[in-house]
Image (cartoon, rainbow, N blue to C red; front, side, top):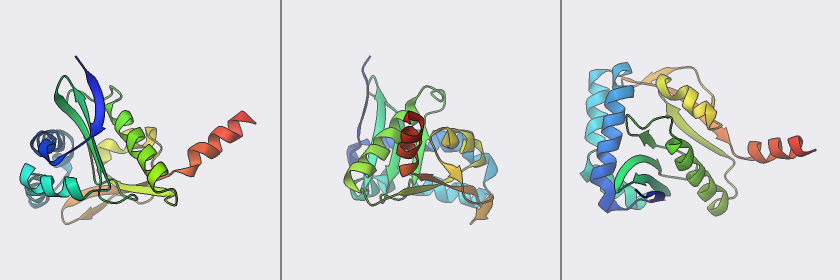
Length: 166
């Protein structure tokens, strides 16, 4: 089987929607109010995603044997809006590969960007911390969705490496 990471296209919208909605239902929905769940599922249908994919700053998928197992979407260089790995494929390095590709893209194409933010669910905080994100808010509810704002300061990695090399 071939495993690779690539930029997504609007043709991937259906598979991306499947991954996002499956991950959402498995790990996010239990913490959200019913109306917020319905809004999220409606906003992540293939039809709604197709247009957003072509307008985003960066969207990549992780594919194995022709099956999309993960996605990261950044509508602008400072925000990760969607970041999901298919249930059953967590803790296999898929999320790390997706974030590293997004980070490299931002650092190369948008060198003035120093911080990337996202809204995490309580379930994903430890995974995001492992990727270099840190909580910058307490848990909050917005329109029925439970989240914790997190940020990754991009220069931090280079500074830590330089410090460790000295």
